[in-house]
Length: 320
Image (cartoon, rainbow, N blue to C red; front, side, top):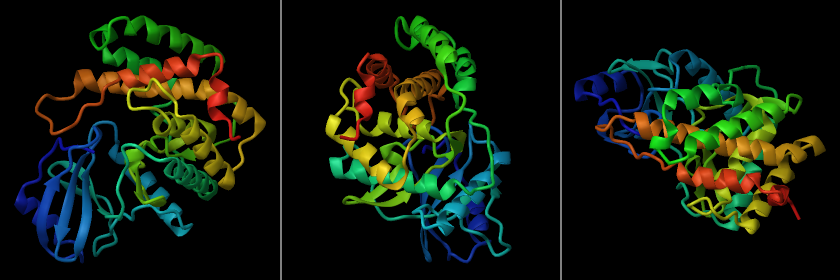
């Protein structure tokens, strides 16, 4: 989440007047993340999130996201509803951007998850994978393996971000291209289930949020992304074995991976680490200097990549 586009008070009032959620009390920008412009919206009817879609989120994809959240909510997953106006419309226009008013869910996002919280996150991901299996919508993963070379090229000279990064990325792209699997179980995945996209109260998951990278890909890749984001130290140099076991056990309670998927996890995790290394490096270069946004350091994902490249990487995904 971030703020790139500001909303004039009159435009905001006119937008909210289309809904049965009261009148505006306050609207404050949220600086975390890098993808969309987000605001904490308080009205006389309650608390909501107002999102204006920027950068990588195509307006044409928004019906997919709305449909996905509706599907998951009907199956009991803790996801935020897209609020409809009086005409039943979820996707609006404000300040020249597509926008949605979204249900505010209780809970807090985590910085340092506990073992129990990792288990709960794994279980929530597994339950989401079961629930989404019957979803008819489809979307290409534009942040997936087929696009990583283009992201690297668009980032420019990666050595500007970190000395030697250009050669590291080139070698890893070659390796992944030669070894990437093609026949694992696939359906719509979250693809970005970092701790800041999971809301919790204690060890209970109260919200899975920010589905704007959701797309069709391997479900085991979704597990790898979640492993990379939940089980490591902040600098990416250490994988906490107890967190990793808890995450994998939590997932297994809800959804069983096949032997082929388990065997592929170290490779998929290398891909996950590279994906976030590349997009963070890209945003480090291209984020406007005047944007209210917190840029994310790519270095911790280079450290994760190194760990997943190690000969014993398969041990990081053990459930015993």
